[in-house]
Length: 162
Image 1 (cartoon, rainbow, N blue to C red):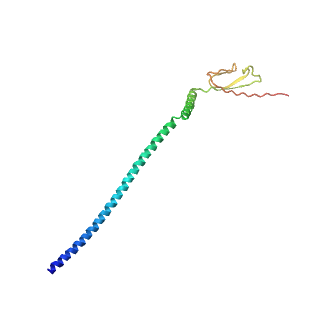
Image 2: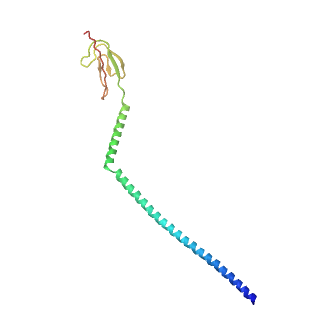
Image 3: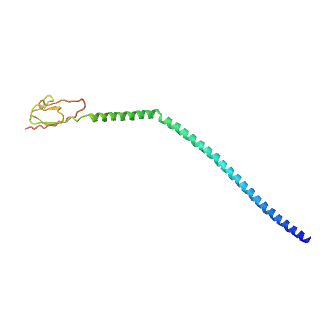
């Protein structure tokens, strides 16, 4: 019986030891569960904050779009666009007109000491270049073949004995 009692004591000690180990492991499992619950709570909080931030960003985007739409439609910008467009269109028109223009050129000089009378070079006119025939060296007249702005240059020298 002593052997049985000894064996029973041994088994009881082992059972108590196993119970202690199980109890410790159970405590660790509960700690891990609590840690997981806390992590889960933090993750859910971050998700909620992320959703709030996302909504805030979308709101800012909407406000920015509304502001930009209002800015683009402002009267000042409309006037500026019209002015810039008008300038651009006028520049294009002038450029197109210039493409179609021919250059009208001539060069002539008076070879005698006769004066110019009534805006006509009359005597001794020598034609040096007449690009499109608009200058008549016999009459001394230039007849503009197209309407427009012309530039003339005249220079003269008077020699006097006095």
